[in-house]
Length: 299
Ligand SMILES: [Zn+2]
Image (cartoon, rainbow, N blue to C red; front, side, top):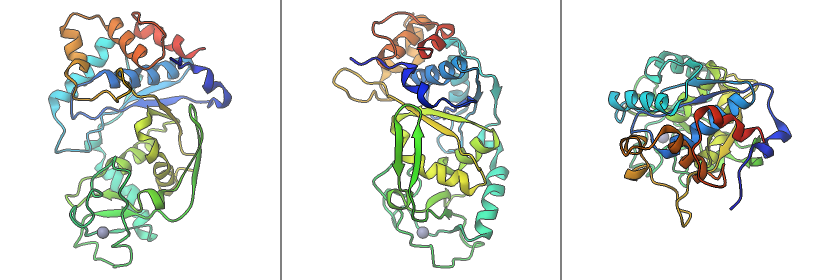
């Protein structure tokens, strides 16, 4: 089994490592989050950076206060302390509107009247990489007063970036997803738009997240420039937890919840050890405290 280390990162290490841990309060913290936290805190601490905690509660329908409290508690139990706490997304709607306004003025964003049925699988579906918005409303000249949804144009062009772990990447948002939904028909800001504006306003230098989000990085880089970020963040995509057989560990798998592991009597260091081992950061299972995590990335 290959061993993941920080070694691959040394080729193009950023000067500044202000990063963020950004859970969505739509469920409890699970082992997959622990892996992400290990990467976020480990890399930030190993490089003298800072960690911003941001609650990504843009999805008001699925957000639950008890999840938000639970995430904060479990994170503290694991031993991860944020250097700063960013405002939750529910307090940032005005900021998103201010970021969108110049795009609308310049014709880079436009109203969209399409329903979920009109473009099956696209509207509101953040992670579906297979479906592409065909640009139906681009040239319709819809009345912005009559339609609340907005899309941001993804014109032709390649987005190239140097992933800090996966090296050179090349993506083409216009072909992959088409124009990106920034605000949906219910008036809710989308994940893609909200996080880009948050990363800009919170001066995030490095975004550290799982490989399952790799395909959406090109569109986020494009959006970042469109909302005025001259130097978009660097990205590092880390491996996802796998179970024997190679399947991605399900978020709903009961045995992967930090609460359940905690209730079963495991220590925080044992849980971090499980996560680090499953992410191949350590070769043999052992306890790892939060204080020991940066050493995993010092190589
Ligand atoms: Zn449309």
